[in-house]
Length: 247
Image (cartoon, rainbow, N blue to C red; front, side, top):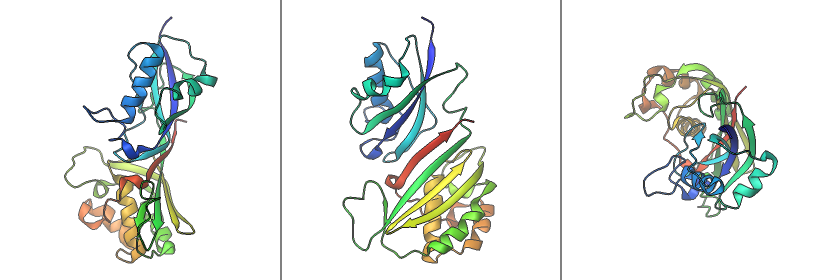
């Protein structure tokens, strides 16, 4: 049989992994996924993700593709492959796609969710899945600041200062802040993101909520292209890759 390409949607708890991408002698999501697929098909399988996630970052719907010379019953593939995966990784859907499909290069939009828990004391049960914030935040000010991030901008200020990247222009289609009881949800959709960009945006919004940065200061921070004016890079465990869109 000739090679066929399949698209998988994968959910994972990143708490115990050193990110998605394979690393020597360290557990990663890619390693576990490729080991399961290679066992299933009795040959070496390589997966190609929509993008990498850092150590401790979670995914609600990461997308990967792989090629194999076997026919897959897509409707039940998730059930069978999940028996070979650890309990903190699950394939939630499988579909056959054209040879032109590419999980990374074909992605048009990505949505990330960042979760914050407002706690006056440490919260052991939420520490792996939220950024724990001990300060009161002005949610209205954070919401007001969101509009200044939207649109096409050079987001060089929102990447780590010691990193180099040739093209730092990105488009943010939507950015929102919502609160439910003691939990805050920051959701951002864009055509792509720089390394740590979402976590730095979240940290900047927290500083807006604390009154350290005014909402109207955001355009000046973006225009400065200097990381020194932003909020800190928030913890990875509050970050979730929520969805990847291809159309």
